[in-house]
Amino acid sequence: MKNILVFLYQWLIFVPIFIVLTLITALTVMVMAPLFGSKFWGYYPPKWWSRLTCWLALCRIKTSGHENLDPGQSYVFVANHQSAFDIFLVYGFLNQNIKWMQKQSLRKIPFVGFASEKAGHVFVDNTNPKARAASIKKAKEQIVDGVSMVIFPEGARTRSGKMGRFKRGAYYLAHDMDLPVVPLTINGAYNVLKRDGFRLRPGKMELVIHSPIPTASLTEAETPGLIDKTRDTIYSALWEQYK
Image (cartoon, rainbow, N blue to C red):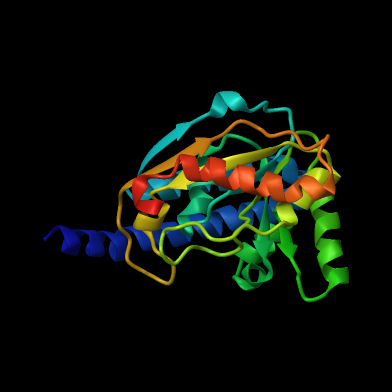
């Protein structure tokens, strides 16, 4: 009976309201960000869209570690990637002005792709070294005045709930700009909505914000050690079912 009620709620209430909220948010960003700047209009409307989405999905949210962050400092956040709901959890509850490093394919989503571009998010183009360098240059232009970048080093959502291999792009960006790397542990999003699945399972999601790791004194040869350190830190706060 519970599964039937959740199914009806998802398709009769959650999905229609989510679509309306998404359109309103995208249109707001598309109009206001070019006129008045993306620092405010590229962050606050999507932040509340994300919060409302989590609450609308009947998810219970727990966060910790906010005291580790300085609102005026720019960071490179790296997080494990469990689900599409990772975006709503981080955007809505990190409480730090952020831009996203996104896959090029997301640009094709109607309204959302164009709004993301106007909000200042960076679409990564890995087709060739020149395009990749242009993506990194765009990212550097966005990380100013306390604005930070969020990157999923795994590159794609997990299929099993377990973490995959971390790629180096986020760490090179942090090193080049002398920015601290902040590991984020995401728990529960995998259970709420699995990759390639359409069944919503309301539940608890948790965001753990770890202490920043300075990169200013690191050499390029020390990058693998930094990757291992952040991955181990993220792993340490995972729920047992994801280890």
